[in-house]
Amino acid sequence: MLGIAASKPVLGQAEDVVACSVASAFSYIGQQFFENYPKWCPQVVELEQLSPPPVHRGSRGRQVTRDRGIDSESTFEVSTFTPASAFAIDGVSEPFRSSYELKAEGDGATRIVFTFELKELDLVMRPFQKLIRTALQEGAIQTVENIKQLLETGADAANDAAE
Image 1 (cartoon, rainbow, N blue to C red):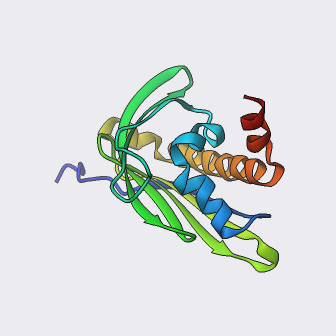
Image 2 (tube, one colour; image 1 turned 120 degrees about the horizontal axis):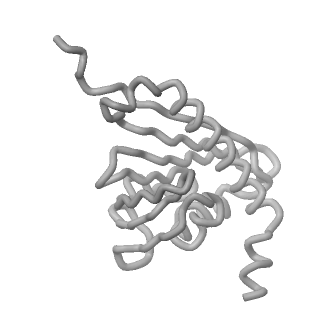
């Protein structure tokens, strides 16, 4: 065997407790995904909802992300839509998954667990798996920090009111 079997998934995961209710967090992340995703993920330079609203399991979208000056386009589908619990998108054109798990904590707070997974790596990228894993982990931490800041400061609501 030449050792070119399918690669194992590479992922980054982060979590934090956010001072808002599970219902509010799910509304922001899941129900309003197409409005809010670029706010917590600055790499998203274009986002288009391909399915009619509202967002639901099976909804499709298209995104263009920019990383280090390189644009990458992908289509995705909402694979998990469980109000006040979980939201996930799976790549249709690229093998990725982004998932958000929400759990109620004391005092009306919410634990958000974010995971970004590359389901497989191209053969030429496999030697860089450790670097990719590190980048995904750093990205997951930044994603959770961004969501926490947006939910806790209400900066998003202030920006919407100003528009």
